[in-house]
Length: 111
Image (cartoon, rainbow, N blue to C red):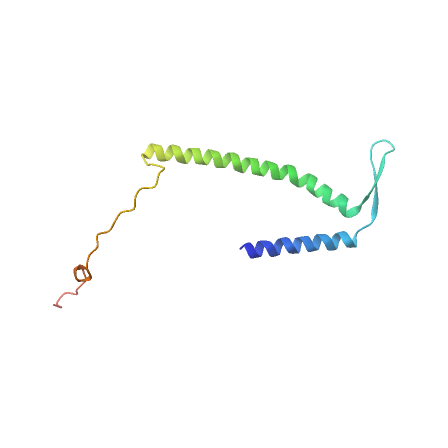
């Protein structure tokens, strides 16, 4: 799965570089008043993309963090209500039996 994720990001980066090289032209942006800014088109587009992505990404991460905390506290409360401990119990030890004492299924009529 990590391999596919890496391939995806490499393809996305190569596509972004090809787009930037093919569209490396100056663009004049008219701001308020008589202020004009000259910028390259790929820089302007990637900046606008990040301007929209970063606040949404921060909101998404904060929501996941809040919900994870709420779920953890609910799971702890449920475990306490059931009387379960959060520490793992010791595994049960099976008695050692020699192979001769292992029960086997015998069909009826066979001795």
